Length: 330
Image (cartoon, rainbow, N blue to C red; front, top):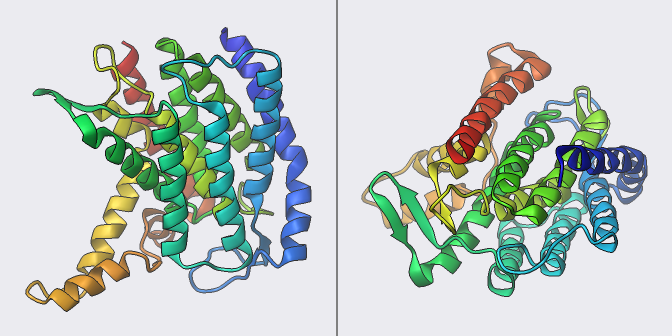
């Protein structure tokens, strides 16, 4: 599969997504799935959510065409495509419901876990070890639960950085393009194609989502994209570490993962009384409470503006992804 072929399918996905966004916007306003400006949100006008429906629809249509053309290989070492699409649709659905009527975070988390269980225990998505300078740590039976955890963490990490125009979609383009480069280098042809098609859809969405955005991904989009990156990045492996996650794999999601870990620590330790069990339980509950102290919020308060903050974070993610590619395919 040549880069020209991958680029052509990415372009088709981008065009399809850009064309579908106006329909998603009309649906959002019709269903009341809109963001109204307040102290937590950076936009100044009521803006549609549900952009994820356009991203998912474009992705699904192009993947269906690829399947009909025989360009998606199955078998060992490749994702089980039907199960992946079913699980992804489940994540899109719960995100769309949340975009229309807010759900409790625990409900969304439960659905994400179910979706991850589907691809891990029903398909061939499995992290079997952790590669480190000291050698390969074989996870054994813990490989399944660890992979579920990885997918769920990455899913929510992408969701958490979706706070300013173009950030989540643009960051995802970089991550997915890097996954495609790595997967192609190690003959994961289906993974490379899926990552390329989704990167194209995200790029097409950016036409409408870059500042000033006319539509947001919403949870339907950020959860779907994060879930897909979680699944596909598990195939980004170095030579000699078949099935193992590496430091380079972490770099592919450096920005969203780093921001998420920081947010969890910040919320958990806020007002924590170390010797009080009740305080620790309250800290766990605070993890699900949104705040305005993410990295992009801090850059905005520093005076960069939405575009400036987005560009700065793109650079961070691009450097991390470039180094991941260097480590894995050199």
